[in-house]
Image 1 (cartoon, rainbow, N blue to C red):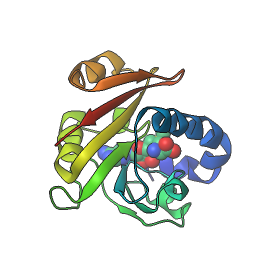
Image 2: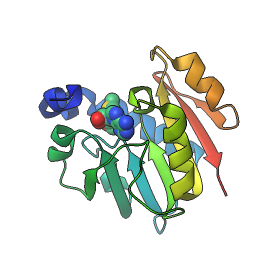
Image 3: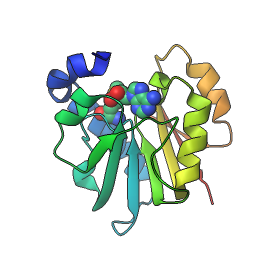
Image 4: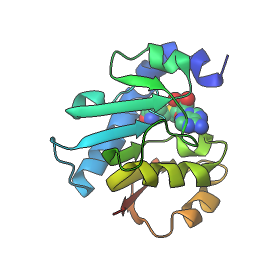
Length: 154
Ligand SMILES: C[S@@+](CC[C@H](N)C(=O)[O-])C[C@H]1O[C@@H](n2cnc3c(N)ncnc32)[C@H](O)[C@@H]1O
């Protein structure tokens, strides 16, 4: 069983408040219309689904997805199971440090997005500096726990 499936049952209780604070900071800095479609990559329990009218999530952890009753499916960032430019926006919150290949993950998120990609990166992640360098053409917004990276892709 993957690590996140093991902690899935208690995830929302432990992390919901902190995670929702990150999405609040994103909404203060990026305009995302209710009419637009959004894919959440590494969605976990899909904490943010209720904020979007047209939301889908993917995550490789069955256990995390089982805690959600939103439109979610199994999938990983490195191989997003959707055609090019399927979504207006792609978000990925505190997940990129878990990707086996974050460069491929970023390429894939940009591939399926028509408008914006928003990625947040835990400041305490071991590869923080390396991943931040890879996202140098993104606009950076600060948050106490994560750095937030925003790009208009097309
Ligand atoms: C800290 S949790 C964040 C979950 C959610 N984004 C949130 O903010 O509550 C990290 C998530 O990344 C997922 N993850 C791990 N490897 C991944 C990959 N290769 N592609 C996409 N998501 C991945 C985990 O399964 C886990 O649900």
